[in-house]
Image 1 (cartoon, one colour):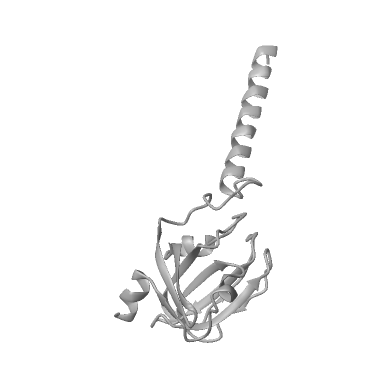
Image 2 (tube, helix red, strand yellow; image 1 turned 90 degrees about the vertical axis):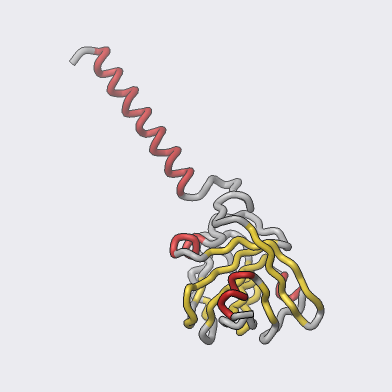
Length: 171
């Protein structure tokens, strides 16, 4: 093999390695500066939470496919207090969430198919693999930045309004 050919092979191998490294960084983590705008699940839409202390508006992304539900808010470095993610589980059943690869503490609100809060997990610990169960059958889950649920006085029985919930509940 000539010296020129061996250098070409080395350059090709280095280029292939560089491309592979860039692809891995892009698809698995978005680097250490991944922010709220990175890893979007979908466009935002308006959601309201009605509590005994008032009505609170949020802009949420909707996770309604297996892929978007499994990705959720993973790799986000921040979640603004007026934003969140609404998960439509596609059917009513008991569920459990975890915080694997989620870098910010979240309040997890479990919601019935009628749009009523069934249970709330306050301050779910980032990067924990502990299962956080709904406690009863739910259709929707709302993730908000901690301490939003406490700030708005969110309680079991409160109402959550969103077009996806309204379509299921018939309201």
